[in-house]
Length: 145
Image (cartoon, rainbow, N blue to C red; front, side, top):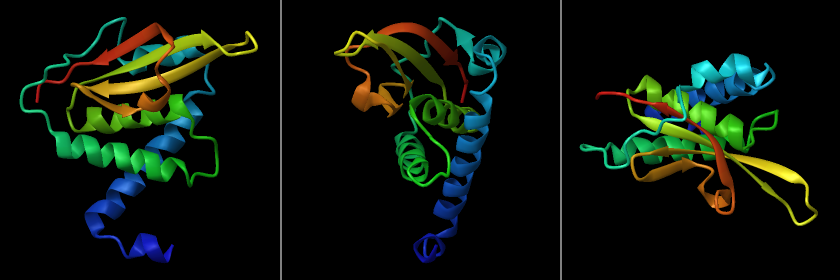
C-alpha cells in the first residue's frame, strides 16, 4: 500500500480504473457468453491496424496498468478478463481496438482457449500466448478520435 500511495495521482487513478474494470470484467464473464457478446463490439470485425495519430503512450500505460493490477486482484484475472478490461479502458478514451478469442489443443489433446487485445499495430493484452491459437471470434470497437 505504501508503494501505491507513493505514485503520482495520474498513475494512482489509472491503477484504480484498471482495478474497477478488472472487477467488472470478472463479474461479466460469469454471465452466459451470448448475453455479453453484444457489449464486446462488432462481432467478426477488426479495427484498423494502421491507425493514424496512434496514441502509443496511452496504449503503453493501459497495458502496464492492466498487467500490474491483474497480478494483485483477489480473483483470477486471466486473459479474457484482462482483454475486456483493457478494451473498456480504451473505449472510454475513444481508442479503437479488437478483442480476439482463440482455441487450440494442449499437449494432452484438451481444448484450451486464449483471449488477446490489439489496438492499431500494438497488442495490449495476451500477446505472449497468442501464437498457435486459431481465432474463433473477434470483436471490434471502432472509435473516431
